[in-house]
Image (cartoon, rainbow, N blue to C red):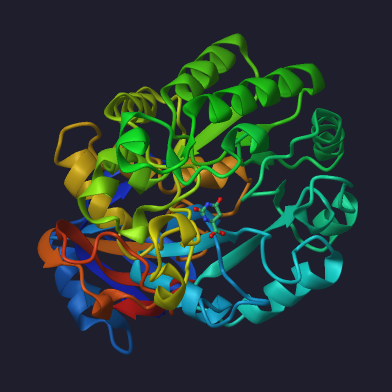
Length: 437
Ligand code: DOR
């Protein structure tokens, strides 16, 4: 064994790889940026590893070693709004959160609705600290009026399409988008919020919005949008992915559609799993303004149940950087969105794993292999021969979120000052250590 050449060995951690069904102590050997082998052996092997010359070692004793996390819903603001986030800074935030593969949304300026912009993003991401996959726009300029050149987007590297931020209001356009998506074997990702029902809404329409005197966006705006697109997916046979599910009715609709065999998948954000609209009235913290909005406890219970029973396939942050200067306004004037990659894993540990909703293996499944499969990404597993994309987690580390923990250029997080348990302590991408606490 000592004759083999390894670049990196991760020793002594508890390895969890839901894709391989692996969950025990072991050592991971990396060479040429790839997983060379995983070995379960005990103290003898430890001794041999200690004697390996010229090999970098990361001691993961007492830690969890999992496939690099995958987030299929991230906003990098480049091109156009580099003051809020660049591809480089967004990838540093990803690495700090344990993510080695992220998918960026097309609402940049110019928008990712053409070949040149896809290539620009992929070029800029080439040397970044996370792999970046591009999701192209469904319609030109995201205006919902005319389809983008979907074939060109796919040819230049786009892995899916979405008009995220807006619902494709015209069902005829959505139908055509789905038909094209089948030709190119990509999923259609949908921001499901009927634009008419949501017009002017800045929080969930509920007792809370009435109490606070803020215009509401009703849950039914999402439910109608989800139902319509499930109908179109049923008719066309397209793969439909519902983004940031927030409403109980959406969870029920997706569950029924899955039972029926419609090709629908879904994601939920940590904030819709953890927060409700009751938080808003406490301090009018504008970082709680998000689209779709934080909803009621009933909705929160439903998205958690959906995550647990598999109706919701994966967790995605919807990392949406905005400058504090822009968020420093009245609640209804603030742009919607919160950052999320640096806090995601710890929030899931503290509020989903520790509350008994999911075990580690299922939580990691929803942050690795499941999202990777939805978009056909070569990620989410520690299989021999695959890229050595790995996250190391201290499951018991207690920490308090401060701005110093953010690699993102933006700090619009509602979790500042929160005490969390569990933290990513190192991230490895292609055998390279891209983050170490
Ligand atoms: O809250 C949100 N912010 N939701 C979206 O869909 C878009 C995002 C953004 O780009 O800021």
